[in-house]
Length: 114
Image (cartoon, rainbow, N blue to C red; front, side, top):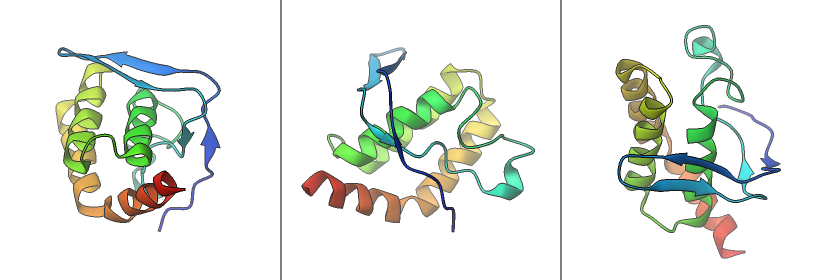
């Protein structure tokens, strides 16, 4: 189980994709990328690295449920590639998200209802 500190964004986060621009507004509750400690040396710490912007957008989608989970995960993967993460690492992170992201999606749904 990954335990991370939840914190609000202090400014809008955005990245431009081929088809649109994805944003997470100021105040969005984030916890960074879900990277197990065993992979920190290969991929990096959850709150650092070029993938943090994609993780913030992903946390926004998981918290609001304005789109479905699969689309949120696809946007995360595309955001990783856009910021320079290798396609292999992006695919690994996407696969882990699809396999293990269900509880985070459900807890985001509970936050969205409040």
